[in-house]
Length: 238
Length: 258
Image (cartoon, rainbow over all chains, first blue to last red; front, side, top):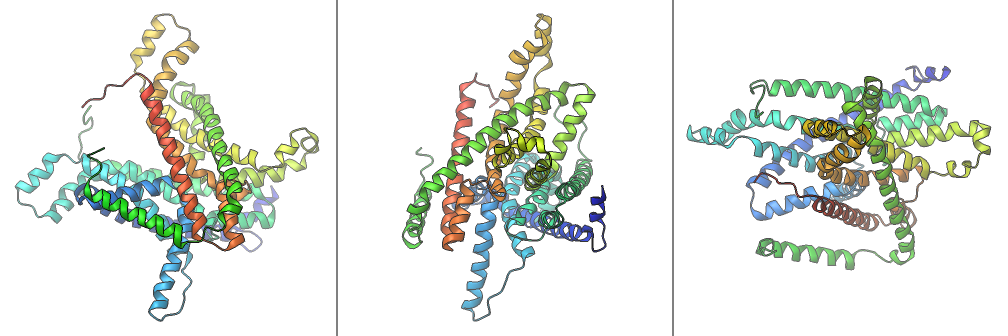
């Protein structure tokens, strides 16, 4: 049990390193989830209202991203995005830059999240009762106001379980960035573990941290869902 | 088929073919003959890791789901904790915990080192298989819990009224209906499991992802192996989806509304 001292915050302990890793993980998870929501909203809108070419391209995007392992997408996008940005910079006569791990991580995981979010939001949009939309149109509501007042509140409760799932995937997918050497929680844990040889202590501690994040966000999302469904009848449909 | 082949799709397909042709002619594929046998071996390893871990995981998931759906509390609580922990932590962390943790623990016991199992335990694949199996069991245990609950009560009551013993009810009535109900979900989950297999490359299991990484390190060619890899996983995912669709169509036809 003397290995527990290794988790303390002052220098012989690695607690501070782990917490810095957790901060990086959460930063990327939040950024990727947000980017995924933006891409997902655009994607869902395009899939429902876009032309035939938009729809086909979007279904290619969602199919490919959901069938190819995240690890490979991360590597392709990580090298690809860095290359592309540098080539553009060089074409405009600038210096080559090293893209920060956080920015690359958010972009890559955000694109992955976007594919899943497209499907979640599309399902929720389809489930909004058509009568509500027609009533709003009949009252002469402008489209943006209708989206804000009618469609968004209606679909929020329906989309919440799927979005909660996506957020959990986002937090766990940040661990994949450890493979490209970005210093998030799992990478920091492995560094600490292989330096001190206290593998069980550190991996268990990191597992506990991830579990706390998961349980807390599960609780938070359940509360948001209850709030979003506050206007609905208790036994809807059943 | 005719409804699918609209004019804009033909144009898209032509653009796609042009892109493929560009990739084939403009990119470097001269490494392929040298590494092709290794890639085939890696692909085979990926497939058997996927198949074995899915089968073993499912065998674990059925009792886990049953314990949560109908078991007494001293079985239901550990099953729920197991599923929560597996689903709440990244798979990469679980793999590393098993490989580095257990791998550093085992050599401390002389009786393990002297046992016949030691040559196997010194390799990486048992830990990879164990981690993938436990992960699949955790996710599917949760799925099976819902599936067991979804079987109509009347079916079980009828079986009990006919005097069927409990294990026969489970075997003939409860389990088949639960499995049929989750077959579409299981297809998606198996694709997710396939997407998790490249993680075992981080503990030196040489499956197809590890081979592609080695090509990258040996030849400094970045995109070509990754593109080939993405293609291989796309094909695997397609095969899994087709296999599950075949399974679904084999059983008694479900009458869906509409």
